[in-house]
Length: 140
Image (cartoon, rainbow, N blue to C red):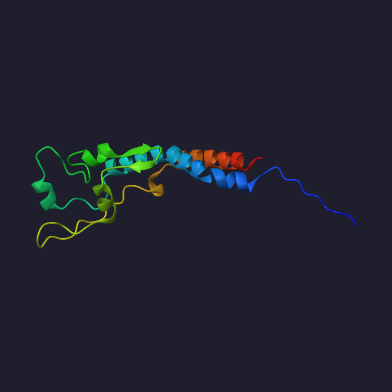
């Protein structure tokens, strides 16, 4: 009787022990591009425009650029090895939220972060690094 012997040059077991580290590295590689994309999106005048009421009630000299009145949100946007970081209320602006003023309309969503705002070049560079690290993690 003949037996078939198969040798491999990869190890799923080895990869499974490294996958969390590999994905965390990817997060760190791509997050600066997400931060840049978010800031570029804010600078591009995210629709919808501010209401005339909001513009009238802003402090003098702060202009009519949504999400940038004080600069606190904008300055807090950073890509770190843990991912995209910003002040908590950034997520509220992403989705929209009810106004705190009585009888006022809800504050509209102004999406400013996500993969659709990252340049294709930067995203592809991070994906290439991810692919390289996954292949490296598979090798025995």
